[in-house]
Length: 387
Image (tube, rainbow, N blue to C red; front, side):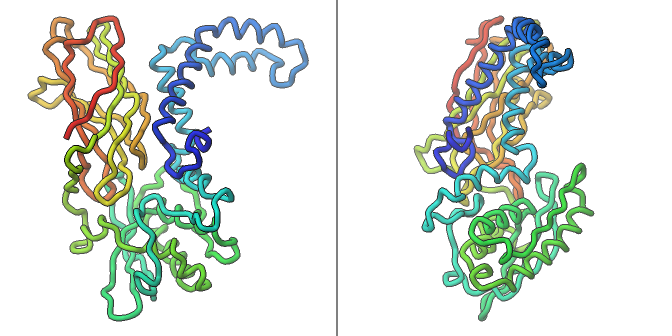
């Protein structure tokens, strides 16, 4: 469904995907309202000889899947997580499946796979022949993971360049190479799948050694592989590499500023108040701007409930991956808010990009007074993000 909605485009979460998630969640909640009717009808069929519907355990499976005792908001959050899981966004190794679908056999010979984090294509002719690749070390990132510093040596008098790539980006490179070349022409990629503490330093050290073997065989592969545009694009320095080349450590904060008059996007919220609790469901964002290096952000939402002199009201969502149109369906709750205080409260909402090698980047913000909020009702609306 995601591939069809995409229209074959590479980016996995276009704005049209928002409507798909909304319709799925709405349909799920409509079915949940009739849980007992479905269970009664299915119960009448237990004696029909259907292997998948033969005993009470099968009915219990349906009951558990419909979660009839949960609220609509909780069920919506649960179902959205199921959609994310089916797309593979929970396991990063599967996250590139949607990228690959858009570029498989349906692509023409002129429509070659590209890397999701590289804004432009680079070639051996434009950059110079790579003579040697060596992964020097691993460094921590803001995602509590590790990136690998690769020393790139080229033929001629050019200076040695340092680039930083994550293990997932190496995975993406290999998966895209497989779309172009048969496996017999490619080096084997480290296939060990780590469950649990996959972001530990011991894992990073082991992966550094494995990736060193991979890049050595890559540079010594057939020229059509070793000097293909995909490889040279992967090892071409990005703006994030230029910021870290001087000291090899975490750089300063990204100075991101959109062009004058640029729309920064909108965020859809559902806000409600009941029993001294303020419920803010972050639903979708649409129309965010790419970062300064041309890549899509990893956006998340941070809230404060003003006035808040002690900065104790911070709430935030998880970060979405490489998208300008994320879907969240996450509920953020404030307890012990007296009804008489609502008119004096203002939501300060910020959308930030979770930077892998730099401080988080502010993409836009808005202030939402709660004077329009009617207790007992849901206020669902889009809100414009400002600089």
